Image 1 (cartoon, helix red, strand yellow):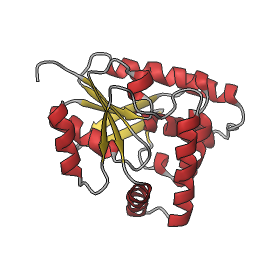
Image 2 (tube, helix red, strand yellow):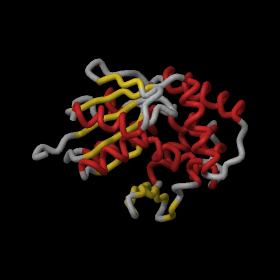
Image 3 (cartoon, one colour):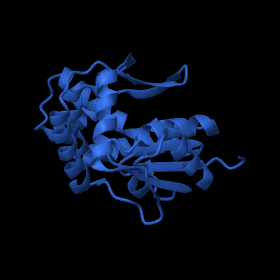
Image 4 (cartoon, helix red, strand yellow):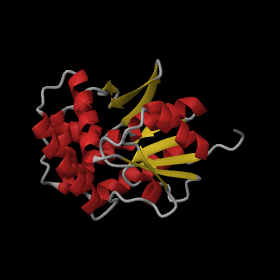
Length: 219
């Protein structure tokens, strides 16, 4: 491909967007950007520094100084927070439960959006998150909205956490996902919704390779 596209992939938790975005980027030799990991990394820093989740200004100040970077190592995306590898830590259920407080602050999202745009402004990127096609890169050359049934999204996320050694019940996880879904769709800035020109892909019952081929066929 001569032209380096910006490929935007949005979708709810468990829709498969992270896996698909990462694999599509690999196939195209593009850079993969996980915007959700940026909010998770900042949430982790807030927890580590005991910054109150009820103090938006303090959280914004934390976002202004936090050094969040991505590093590809053996085809695995590493998330660095202030030069420390936090790839595993940011997936902890405690971080997941608190990320909503960070992601819902408009000024903080503005800081993150500018960083995301800087990462992708030259093209040749696959960017995934909740508001990529609607807010971060509304002029992306290719836009996708991945979705799946609640039951399948729950099962995928549960298997992922168990494989990482996390101790969580499926009932508690289901409640967490329901809360995340509501928060993602109702936040005042950067709410989860399908862009009008995005291609909708229901991944229920499809394996990874089938979804990848569908995305690449449109690209």
